Image (tube, rainbow, N blue to C red; front, side, top):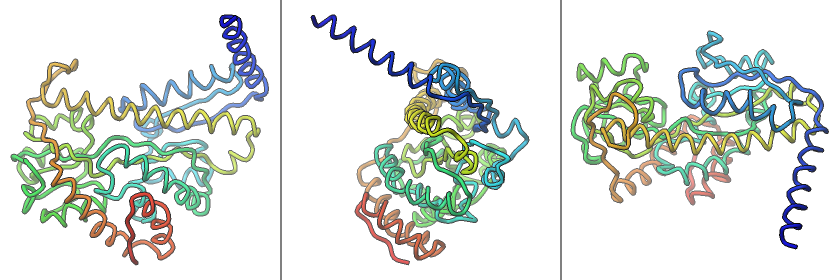
Length: 348
């Protein structure tokens, strides 16, 4: 009897999926993905759009996807091109546009989320604010948010804790990271990625912020000795679609895509975590590393005291500086979303 019930349940699910797929009109999508050199693009984004979506829709929904660098694009122009409808679906790192729109920083203020659980909480709480801004200013519909990788410190000097950063010059990626580093008594500086390795080798800088796999593929292990594994950011990326394009899609296709992009972002969070561990193993030369070459770096985990220090600086000084460059409404929206989630409040 139990076997019959199980078979009936399986049949019902299969039929339900079949009907759902048949309800989808033939739809062709154009997607712009992340950097072609990333494993995230090759292993997750590309197969999602070219295999998963067609398979789950029984071939009714198909997509063409290219990485933005394959199209000769740099990154900062992505929102503008999506607003114009030149790009229909796309993945955009928010760090490219925070100078023009400080509100975007609110989803990844340096030091507020030092673990993935907190980072996901921040994303969940701030996404409605971000969605409203993207709709109003960029004419885009937000489909999801995912991280590239936790942003940690790579140093060519011994770093055992945050106090060792005092007086050191540190390459940062975002404005709030610079605010955090400055509050720690260090000197933030901006250097393009392709010049960081040389700056580390020549001792022009003592440390640099990056994702672990980025540091590994960039061969930073040849110029640095210590990894301070305290995430001060996540390099969040938005998955979005031009609103005009979205409105032209059949409601069933909209529902289908929303559900599946949610699954995609979950997959990207998990992939980011797995890539980070692989990078740590290979940067330090651990036996678990299956890549070559291997580094010989020292991995330093943050102490509870340092975690408390970061939390205090981030919730007071970093947020305060961000508030000074964001609007009054922006600050109010942050307090009602992330502020409530993390139990902090900032003033304009």
